[in-house]
Structures are given as C-alpha cells and as structure tokens.
Image (cartoon, rainbow, N blue to C red; front, side, top):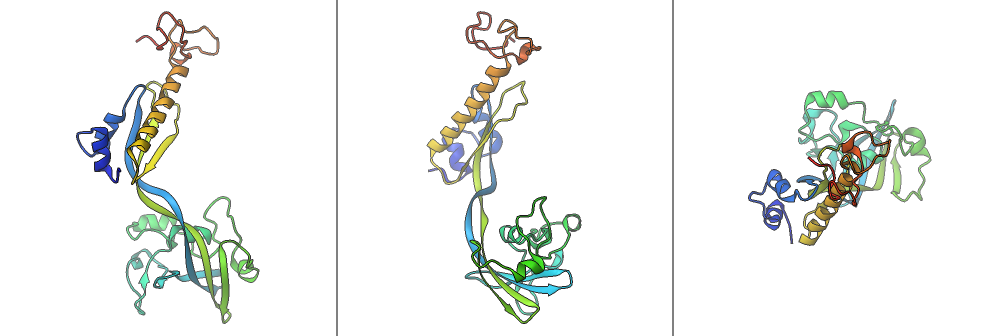
Amino acid sequence: MIRNIEDLAAHLGAHEDTEKSIARRVYKDAGCSAGVSRGKVGEREVTYTVQCRLSIRGWMPLAWRPLHGKTRRVPSSRDQAGKTDQFGRLIEPMPKGLADYLLVSAPAYLDPGTTQEQWDLRWRTRIIGCEVSPEPHKEFNGAFMRELPLDDELIRKTYRMGGLLAYLTIKVKEPVLGDYFWVTGYCEGSDWGHPTYAVPFPCTPEQVDEAIAQADKDGCATWDLTHGCDDCGTEPEWSLPSRRPVNPDCLTCEGHGIVL
C-alpha cells in the first residue's frame, strides 16, 4: 500500500522523495509529467446549523456549527479569524461548501492566513444570496427565508426566533482534502493538452502504474498525430513536417515519426 510520497518514491525507485525525482522516474516513452499535490480528493456530506440575522441588506450569517460540534462565529474582519469572542466562541471562517451553498462570498470562508490585501480584493459582503459565481444556483435573502422549500434535499428544517433571527439546518457536500499522486501525458514539441490522472493516497501500486501507463499512452498518441517525417504524408492540411501524422508504414522513419 502506498500511503505517502515516501512510499511512492520507493515504489518508483526514485532516489529522493521529491516531485522532481518522482517525475524523472515517471518519464517514459513519449513522456509524462508527474508529481504529488494536496487538494480535493473527494466529498462528504456534512450537516450544519447556521444562525442568521435580518439586516436592511438581507440575511447575514452570524455563526455556524457542525451537527455534533461547538458554535463558531463568522469573522467580520481578517484579524478576527482564529480568535474567540466575548462569549468564548471560536471565530472561524465558514467551510467552503457551506458558504458556496448559501452563496456567501469570500470573507465567510477565507483562510486565517489570508493577507489584508487579498481580503480587500476578494471582499464583497457576507449577506446570504451574495452572488459569488456567474450562475448562482439558488435564490436567498427575503424570498428564500419566506418560501423555503421543506422538501429540498439539502435543507432539513428551519425555524424562526422572533422576527430578526433565523436558524437553518443544512446538509451540504464538503470537499475532502488530502495528498494525491498526479500524472499527465507529455509530448515534446507539442502544446496539446492531456488529461490529468489523480490517484489519492492511500492507494495500491497497481493504481499508480495504471495511471502512468494511461498518461504515457496519451503522450504517445499525440506524438503519432503530430510528428510525422517529411515522407509520412503529403496531405495539404499538414503544412509543417513536424505536424504530420506518423505513417506506421513509412520507410524513411520506419513508423517512428520525425527524423531528427
């Protein structure tokens, strides 16, 4: 079982457990680019309760908590993140999946390490329904709070406390972060894009080998489409010799492509 970059390097026979050493070992026939990164490796469903307050601009999230967890207050400025308020509640950005679902913009879920400049550039508002993408997938604000569909597959229940406070219990999909091995095909002399194959840790050696083999096939296929020699074909649409398809029956290059 491959659980981390050290196990991966050992499996590939790399001298060091670094991306550069791993990429050198992965490079095969036409070539592959490879490395180890950290990012989204899956999704999981998480239930949150969100406390909202009605303002003149709309419904503003004040605090949030997981189904079985403590309440966290939503920061209203970059400097608050990671601290506690006067009630002892931790001030934490909202999880990205929850903020995206509510269409709340960047300040609700920016990492505590975000610089003031980044905060200022990305800041708009944290009113529910703020448009954070070109195609918002829900309508919120007053209409949302008044006509909330109880049969929505993500929203489990709502209730109001007075006229200015509301509590939402929402089930959303949150990204699962982790380390993964990635590999993509490469063909020298060509700028064609190739699919990237990601294999999250832990994984089996067979999964890594399969991803590398597929990426290598992609690179080889691009070579065959773009690196025919002068004698591989005379089709008028292929004006440059290095952009002609390889003719497997060509006597000059013996089906290997451009003669260097």
